[in-house]
Structures are given as structure tokens and as C-alpha cells.
Image 1 (cartoon, helix red, strand yellow):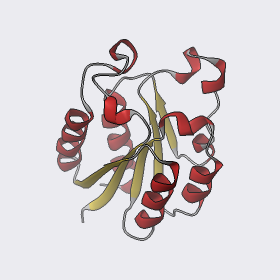
Image 2 (cartoon, rainbow, N blue to C red):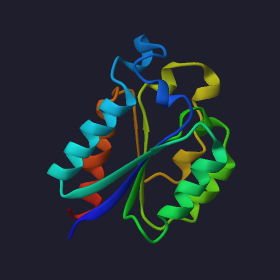
Image 3 (cartoon, rainbow, N blue to C red):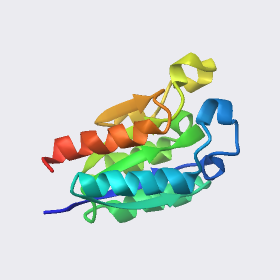
Image 4 (cartoon, one colour):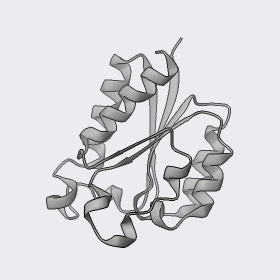
Length: 146
């Protein structure tokens, strides 16, 4: 049985490869999504990927995943530190949730040290660059028994 996984990227992640490459690396979001799709297939997972710069759109993505996906891998970007709405949406989601941060948020500005999303996440991966997404997929497969 193939488990469906939704990869959600939040604000400014559409600028991967362009925005602060010294922090976020040189890979574009399209490259990261392609790598994730390949890894998901290797793990027996079906991946779909979405990105938005808008909090409400991210909430709608999470709502739409209810009952249709087994897991969400989410990099909420700056909304990690501000969005109770995203946390509430994730709390209404029944599947596995893995939170990913490309940079180590704990080595950055103090306001980035707290993530609302972490309160719901079944795992948090930070500071592993874009490889963190691949690690998240491996963890999803493990939790789902894929």
C-alpha cells in the first residue's frame, strides 16, 4: 500500500536558491521537490508538494489533507514562530506531521527559537539543510511502516 504524503513549504521558500544561499543553500524549491519525490518513491510513498506565502492558504492545504494523506512534511517558514492558526489546523489533522527547517533555528535570532508547529509535530528536523526534507521522508516511512 502506498501512503500519500503532502510536502508543504511556507513563505519565501519559493525563493530557495536565490534568497540568502549562505543560510538556505543553492538548491531551488523545484530541485528540492524533485529530490523529495524521488526519495518518496524509493520509500514507497506518494508525494505531492505545495507552497504558499499566505497563512490562510497553508491552513487550507492542511485542511484538504485531512482524510486524504497519511502524513504532512511541513516547513512553515516564518509562520513557525507566529501562527497559532497553522498549529490549530495541524491539531485537527489525524496523520503524521514532521516539521522541517533548513537552518538551525536555535542558532539564529531569539525570536526563531520557538515554533508553534513543534507542539503538534511528531518529529522536528532543523539545521540539516535541504537534506532535512529527505530525513523527514525517511522518518515518515518508518512511522507508517512503509
